[in-house]
Length: 203
Ligand code: GRF
Image (tube, rainbow, N blue to C red; front, side, top):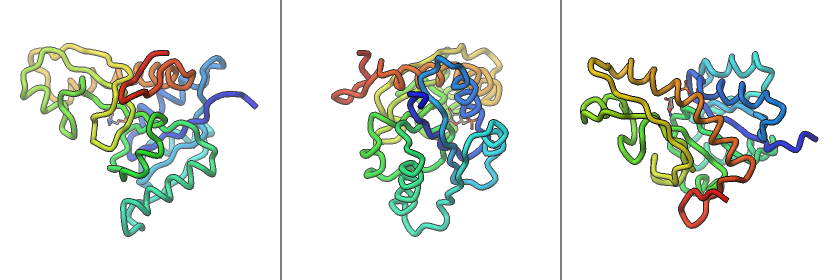
């Protein structure tokens, strides 16, 4: 028994945030262990990274389910089978059903590449550049049914520089994501931040 919080990471693609969490969790004093990486996309590059790190992986394609609820039920069953206590969404490109989100409320985190509540949804860096903001960044938040709207756990900021393209800004933000997500997961796993009355509270 390691006594560490058992975490599943849900991905759909590249998995660089997943890789950052796996790396951080290697430290003996890190309070969480990555017990499962689950992807809804069979070809997600992150799966290879997880396998190479010796982490259990599972593919559940949303395409074989008739409804969002049925897909979420299959994911939930996989999480239960792996005795998962906390879920980290990391580039997981599925909207989840309200029932699933409510079940995991306070125990499911997401990372978003903007300073929420600005620039929700997709094409985030395009939105930031179009708005002319001088600072952007990333946010780790608890997941609630409304997209990209959950209580904020942690944020990091980066400058938006003259001449930035969505790609150059994305790269600068991503570097911060890789530092922020492990810090935020640590806070939640060790019980220092909890979801209380709709806010992320330091206890
Ligand atoms: C990241 O920018 C994350 O903030 C967003 O999707 C992207 C996933 O990238 N939710 P990766 O798969 O972690 O490399």
